[in-house]
Amino acid sequence: MTDRVVVVAGAVYDEGRLLAARRSAPADLAGRWELPGGKLEPGESPEQALVRELREELGIETEPVDRVPGEWPLRAGYVLQVWTVRLLSGEPRPLQDHDALRWLAPGELDAVDWLDQDVPAVAACARHR
Ligand code: DCM
Image (cartoon, rainbow, N blue to C red; front, side, top):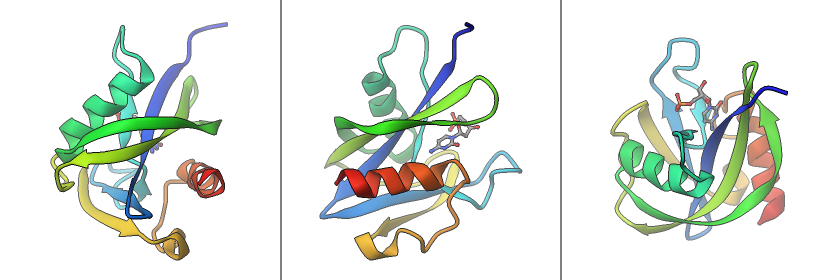
């Protein structure tokens, strides 16, 4: 079996609200919302990759808390895993890859147009809480 590329995404919570990020690129994903994150670099653990991606993309310092059960296929060879993340410091800003951010209260989780693959991931996050 060939290696799969793991994409890690963070369910960043602050005061019970979940952070959603709107992608600005690539064109086929732009305008859709996601749990922010990205691909593991060689030698990184998922937790290390997540802390790095959230720092680069949003300018925040975070602490991975636990893995949300489940795994969601992206395009061929890629798989999405999600960690619950605590916000330690910083106010998230869309520094790269995103052009808008929203904090969603528990009753607002379907208020944004999530990427197809993030829909089941967000549902799993809600169950996991
Ligand atoms: N991706 C996704 N859902 C997420 C995060 C990422 O579907 N919550 C996808 C979008 C890209 C790939 O993973 O195709 C890699 O993400 P990035 O471009 O942010 O490194």
